[in-house]
Image 1: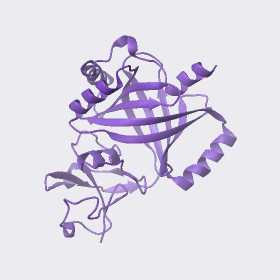
Image 2: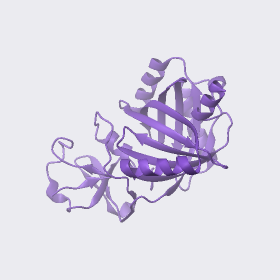
Image 3: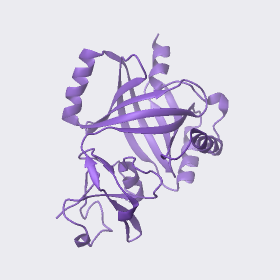
Image 4: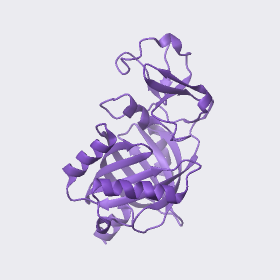
Length: 266
């Protein structure tokens, strides 16, 4: 018997606290979550944080799930949810409020972010390929050859908290290679961004401390808006965290990393 949590195989090595596997039904999908605040957002990273794993979660698949609160239950202090239906490789429309800034004191901001989160960072290595499109931005993000996410998003280039509307499509590594080849032929490459990211979760906000190849150190906030939340609510959350992190308004940047690389190289 085994169960998967958004692609995770649960075994004695990865989930030592879960000894009574008989309570789970075979081959059903579950996720371990901290709060109800993330609604239908994919919860893979939440799982890694909730279980205090010291390694980036490795997804075997990237199925998108929806759940309802009626099936929430608690086991040994961990909150679990069973998904009602799933859509393999489907897309999901999401909203973020984002802030991005150049940072000079890398060690200090990591220390503050960890204090706010209450947990150590999850280290993620990302390789983003951007393609030429007429509207918005389109990128294929790969995770150390294990999986990939196609991201289409719209975001205005301005300082301060700004709304980002985005859609995700998830692929395994072989599918991603084929997709990348097709997109390069059809659209052409605009640029590539390679970075090492430290992820800290603070409630519904992802704090990213990024080391970007050829650019340096940056901080990014992504407030994941719930369905009922307004842009203004997300902006307030972002500004409050910006203040707590000690990030000054003059250090904010308006554009994406790929735009900064364009400016540097041209």
